[in-house]
Image 1 (cartoon, helix red, strand yellow):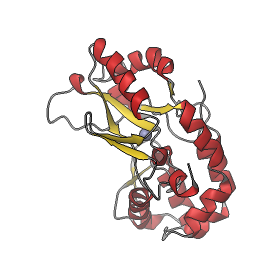
Image 2 (cartoon, protein in one colour):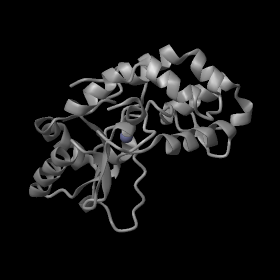
Image 3 (tube, rainbow, N blue to C red):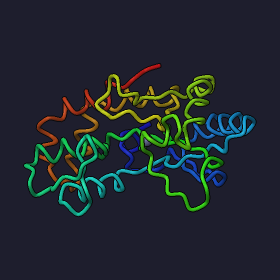
Image 4 (cartoon, helix red, strand yellow):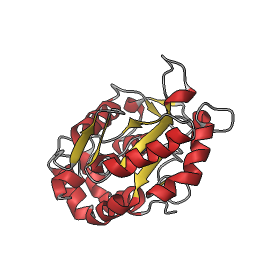
Length: 224
Ligand SMILES: [Zn+2]
């Protein structure tokens, strides 16, 4: 992937999959459909609730949270008022739940948030919370199935909550053969250029601590 692809500013690396509806790196389509086929054989309708996401979408989420137009939450899920926080505190609060634009693994098309469509009624609003994937939750069985079977298809969980600065995300899986190359290629310098060129709120604060943010959210992920 080139710099623009690594930071989600173009979609030249992305293929649109009509069924099930998602957008993936061209080299991740076949592995994902193989994983889905195996899940289907065991009774799960495995789909990507979220797949490729571009830089501008991530930028919108970031700027809305920073400005207070979109709610922000602390680690316990309690709402935070943007105007009561200084720029450093806002950046910290946003990063608890959202990726820095340019630093999301969803930019690569290698990462998917997975759910089982069979497990929920029509009209159920998927929230992607720990509770949904914990014992008793609708996605507990698919979480268990993925834990056992995803590695055979090249998928792993980068956010287990043990190493990275990201909260545990039992739904988030990544296709290692392509994602690991992207992770190495997305250097602090590449991320710096993408952010410096964007209308990002809190940009000075972000650029001032970019090496630390890169180490925490890009480099230091969980590995199987
Ligand atoms: Zn995700």
